[in-house]
Image (cartoon, rainbow, N blue to C red):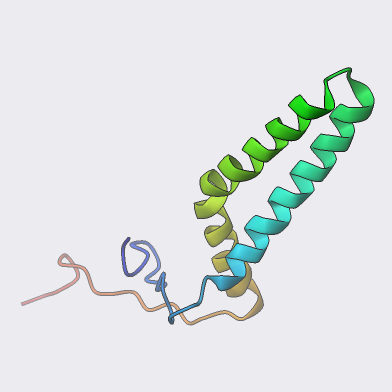
Length: 98
């Protein structure tokens, strides 16, 4: 993973443990999808309860692994929106004059 954003210079890892909040976002989105999906399919289709339960269990294991990066990105964007960090652009090779 890069240390800073190439476009704006925003550090991706400001401090250790920074992305702990993204775990809560990931868990919340997964829980919401599983709960709504389970009850939506339970009451609208004739899928067997066991098949539905195991499919939701598989979803709750696979989805958080796929959504991990998106949750971190959302957490970083939310933090930047609420508590903006000053952007520090690193000088590129073309900016240097000798």
